[in-house]
Image (cartoon, rainbow, N blue to C red; front, side, top):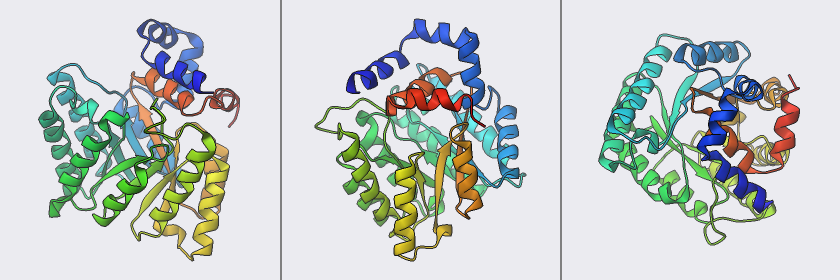
Length: 308
């Protein structure tokens, strides 16, 4: 399994394969199922359709590791346009972004400037910006940026973060973030990390996910439990019932196009479900990391191409 995981992560950066897959008919089919299109208008159309079915959404303009200041500023501008598009609508929608998309590799000050502007925009619009987590090299910088921004009184409640359960450090990170009142999306993790930093075995990742989920649900802060794993969902529901935690105080989060049947069933049961809606032409690295998260997802995603 570790070999397959490493292979998918390596393939996510293969430019030749990327060009081939993005131009192929199967590639376009995968894109249509798991990515909401290439334009803001496509993402908003998908968001409105999901809203009609009882879902909340978070919108993500795909892209990362930009190579110029201009690209970073353009990426930020897309999110300003998204916030403007959401504001007059009835959608329960927010946005997710990556620091490397905002220019972190070029200049941390540039990334902070871009994200700070977006958080101010979101606060003025009574909306919310989620800063996604990337590889382990970005874990502490991402936490520092989010805590820095959230510390400003006008930004409180308008910026959040993602924590990855496969990292050994995550319990400590959650403890600090919760003390600051910061909203967290909990996921398993999608990058290749050494055993010194991340749990290599699924059973250990799952056990840590459940432990972290319990920390979040008991915090009194509105968090997102991001998983398609029925065992993790069942553990969350069971813990909430046992601790008499109101389902309205947290939400499940799932990816666009994956396990739509499970998404619908949770909404029917009365749970909040937020669908992560990616769009843009940078879909290939995103898709390959979904496979790398757990190599068994290859068959899972293949089956989902045929599911409704």
